[in-house]
Image 1 (cartoon, rainbow, N blue to C red):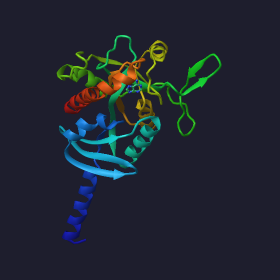
Image 2: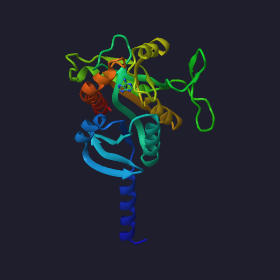
Image 3: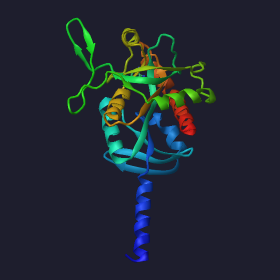
Image 4: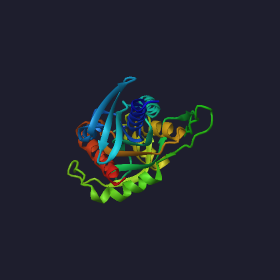
Length: 263
Ligand code: ADE
């Protein structure tokens, strides 16, 4: 092989491997949940594929790929599957809003998931509703609770005090660490919100986390779900959600950016 051919070959390998280098994926379900991130992204490249829009680039010094999954568990599972088959993803962070179900939480408070689970994967008998573990594609039982990556959890804990979160409804956000309950339900029902806390010790509920967590678990990819409460999943939630979703989504992104900065 001549020198010219060799240099072209090296250049090809280099450009291929650098564009294919490991990235941290950040996923949000709705446009508001990724806007501040895509606005901050440096060296931005947009890739459209399979009905999805990927934003590749850098945040601080980290190579990232940002993706809007769409709302709900099916969209989250589809998007996460496509994401990890297209990119070499080292970790996945989900960022977005949720309904807080912890009795001491206010709209604006944040929940970093220690684990996520499907509250609507269940056996519903005449007098009992039993939430069950899913199985993987080979029929092997998954855990009921998909655990967040311990390193990402530690990082999240370590950066909280450095971040200034926006007040929501005059309330300075507190950050909780706890379980998040996922289901294909926008919950605006005080009794069911109480049930999620009572039965499972859940801190918040949303519509994508466990779907992403299940796909990440089945593919051995570490993940973390960060949610900021736009509402309390109570009878008033559908009103609060519209009022607080934007500032709440931005606060979750602030925490994600704090983590990226420390990595
Ligand atoms: N996302 C934000 N608020 C929610 C709620 N109350 N139920 C489900 N997902 C949510």
